[in-house]
Image (cartoon, rainbow, N blue to C red; front, top):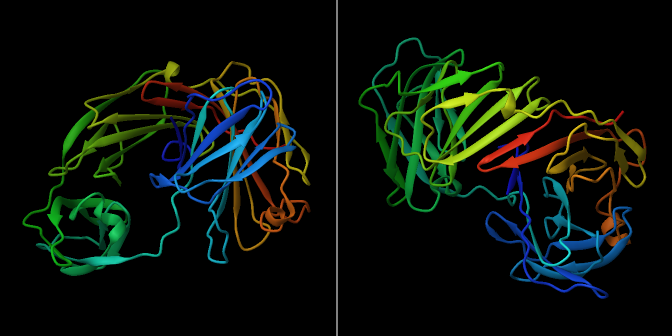
Length: 382
């Protein structure tokens, strides 16, 4: 499994091999999901690396589409199934098809209309010198000027049950002066958090750096919702009185979002964090070139080392909808072209033909290890 930002970009792509057919008339099954649910109705294309289309299908109620392909073919899935004026982003995901088998493509979360499930009432003793409070519910962080306060609770913040995980942080100029964490039930649309005392510390997790100086962040997950922790220095800190199901450690060398990024995920919380030179990829030697705007034909040269895959990310906005194209490519790939679209799709997904449409590009080499993803620094078009 590979995830972006959370790891690199907040998008997860999974490739699985299963049974299929081979030889003339080769077919493959693509399974598209979003938010853990079948992505019913999304468009699935099969094509060559030069963009020429081989087949087009629509995912059924289980998110499956059986497509005709050939050896070396690619699958592209377009999210969402229906593009409307309110669609926030059009996401296009391209991956190589296995010679035999099933390819699972996990798309971005569905756009959801916020649904208020109830309200959380918070009371607390005074906390000196604060300029406000952050109420973190996992799906959203709400800023309030003073306590007591009552905030709306979105249905998305409830995770798998009717319990609500809450972290309240009193801050001054972004410095946390005190916090309180808990899990409270939401009953009949009402939850209450009566903070008796403020915490100022927590469980310290030692950080050891040998020969590298990355910026490190620790995020923890409770009931499928992600929460930040205090800034990491020579140690990370776990919130007191907070149930941790899993954790993600992100280490970045160089500029944020552009440098080498190593992401580690694990059940529960880490007991120690350590990084050295071998925990990061070497500098990516590739030069990336945009050969043709009209077809988004892109090529690059040798990486200087052999990764497990390449991750190409391209964004542009020709109209009301930003468009993102993520292509997870095999290690021997050195070029790719956006798939050829039928007229109905081309009218909705406009390529950045004119120079007036800005293109942002990002190529990374990827190496995966157990519970760890290493991404090289980002290289864009020249």
